[in-house]
Image (cartoon, rainbow, N blue to C red; front, side, top):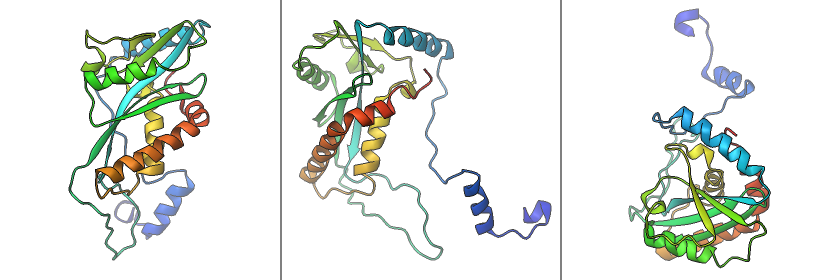
Length: 224
């Protein structure tokens, strides 16, 4: 603005103007460029029809990784100051597998050391021990990870339905992961594996206790 418009505008003035206009400094969300819009549109239409079917219960499932020393995120730091966050370099990591039901606000979450066909089968086995459902058809909507499509999986009461490729925005549980990580893992650094597991335990209890509010708030805020 100084060079092109010859206006003596201070940086703080520009930032205040951007804030007044509703802008905030954020890290952009990575967005895939291989989406098939026709398949996404077809899937959304199918999902809308299923949501109206009183015999069908929709569950959305996914996995997320939680690190013990996460990558620092961008933040405001005063000029002349050095921003630091602890990083131990141990590369601690745990995975959480879960599913949510936007209609009821229910959530079912399990911790695992990693994600593969065996851990996903263990998750399905535990999910099938839940109380009998009120609706006869239980659809579990998942992405196209290889362990979600293994031929040897025993689904029990659940029927799999797969998202279009590169479409995490159509899965409401992704927003629950964001809430959990923002509330419990911002600048959290685990000193060892036990500390990370303990923190995840507390985070999942928090998510389950608040599940109806969290999940109904997160649910179907995609392109439906």
